[in-house]
Length: 397
Image (cartoon, rainbow, N blue to C red):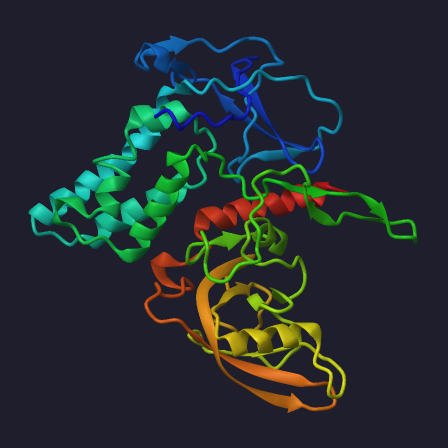
């Protein structure tokens, strides 16, 4: 596929006493995740310039190590501050045989669903295998364009079988949604699963001898998405982020901390439901959401944004935060996009501070909120990623 020429992270290997070390350079500093594993027959790479069948031996140069954008939760975290030796760019046509097998396992599970249907068996166990595999593939850290091409994962049997509903199978809606998103990303060469891409931390002194590390979006990050638009844009129901700044980077919500985002004259584009001390009521498809405190007869800027949106009757993007209390719809960690809502009414709660409560109704025809069951977001794989991120944050002192 000619459009899969995205640049990737550098790769190589080193060997010492029957082990190799794979470090990971994180975006905050020179901290690294290091994984040690025994070599085996799968520790060879394959070059697609010869049909994917030509093994390429690992280099013994310690400088040529595989840098991974995501590491399994079992990795050992070590502090390796300081300059790192330069690595070689990962060849987009090289991969390990085991990685190709990992890709093709989804096809095996899809075929199992076809067999179960033909034999009249219950499809749920087979669906669960496919569902879990798609979730695992979302965080594959070894992807290169040649893997997508050689595995033929975008066609049949593969993502196309799920998205287009071949073989007479009615796939669960959440599997179809997740397959469509991942297939779309890989089709355009977006192979990096790292959710903190483009996020940096700046070390500052707090004035009393301590250090603070505010997050910000790298000004040189070219894939930032503007947030000043009405509607869902390219967002998908259930899309998840570990931090609100990541949602700002991807155009879901334009504020890093504030709960209401919008522009004067157009109104609010999005809101975040979180534990902010306001009298919000969350019933899933129906939300009673409070603006912010203002002065007597002078609504706050955020409240005015909501009022303008109500006047224009345009939809609002709603994100839920894990900081919500006693809320069954909240994600376990981070923030989740839960679809479009429209403001159907409003009422003043406190005239002295111009506190207004808005009633929002979820727009009909959307997929259900992904807060429970097998379709829940974040997935177990995403939560493992979150835990790894938290460990890295702990080292950034």
